[in-house]
Amino acid sequence: MKNVKVVATSKNIKGEISLSGSKSISNRVLLIQALCDDKCNITNLSDSDDTVTMQKLIDSKDEILDAHHAGTTFRFMTAYLSTKPGTQILTGSDRMKERPIKVLVEALNELGANIEYLEKDGYPPLKIHSPRSEYKDKITLPANISSQYISAMLMIAPTLSNGLTINLEGDIVSKPYIEMTLAIMNDFGIKSDWNENTICIKHQVYKAKDYHVEADWSAASYYYIIAGLSESCEIILKGLHQQSTQGDAAIVAICEKFGIKTLFGPHQLMIVKPKLEIETPVFEYDFLKVPDIAQSISVLCAGLGTSGLFSGLQTLRIKETDRIAALQQELAKIGVYINKMPEKFSKKTGVEYYMQEGKALQQDLEPSFKTYNDHRMAMALAPLALRFPVIINDALVVTKSYPKYWVDLQKLGFEVTRQ
Image (tube, rainbow, N blue to C red; front, side, top):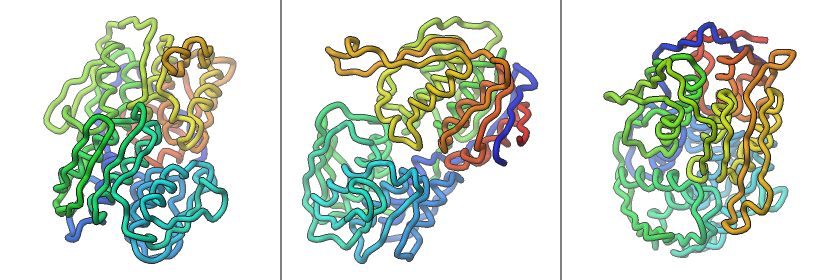
């Protein structure tokens, strides 16, 4: 399946979807399971490529470990391997070799790890040796680095002989993901102390326990786009909870602004959009804490013709692709434009703003959207089929986080055909 054409057979959407487990939770639980002395059973693991890769690498005895495109996996494995005896090479895809890892490597080396670069300084692949010495117990890091770096270090912290205190300087990026990490660690018996920008974890022992992974709120966001662009909608999503550790559950409150309601039941929810349209001429949001749903909201605004004022997008440039540039390029094909606001708007606060304007309109031909090897580009753009047929290039890219995405769209009445 190279490309797919997506056509909405009806604008009144009704159906039921069982979502796979959260990739973010799954990868954290797999690493913690590896740090436990005893075995535990994990149910509803994500079926994403990233989680499958994570599990393979943890179980592997090979000297060369390939994380492919999996950024979270690469970062978590870097910290994990840095505490282990022996030498391994951790590598990845060509795109992975363009994604910076310097901050994490330097922090681990400062603590006592022994990691070297095999190609370009600051980037994968890495050669990870046994630790040089007993790990130090304190580190200071800029708070605006990827939360995955911080989470990686937090998860190994209780296994270090002196524990670890992390001081974060500045505004914390993607804070809900750090909170998720600490909450999951707590489920496995690890206590932490988070006071302002300092997180302290003493030396402790993980306690193995069986664990059920909640469904993926990031995946749920694409159904909220569908609801927003539909004439009416009733979609049941199974496996999600109202009280969730996943930051992307913020999609519920965001979409209330667009007239989309969420009704929670036991281990599931229903997304409801009444036939009465709610006009939202302008929508402003700071995605600093939840960058993974920025594309979803951008496309929703594009489909509705809602002007957007977005901030907190700085981490999008170092994801699977430069997601800001990718959105700019692809939405321009349908008459929607995203522009960085002039410097004068951010002089006082230091906040970088982007203005989105325009409404998605079909040009002469059905739009053919590139995905830039980014699963979220494919899944966010496909619901525009409720406005006009769309072609999504490199459709199998969705396997990174949601392999059943195209099948599940068909359950809601969309036609998905290979091109």
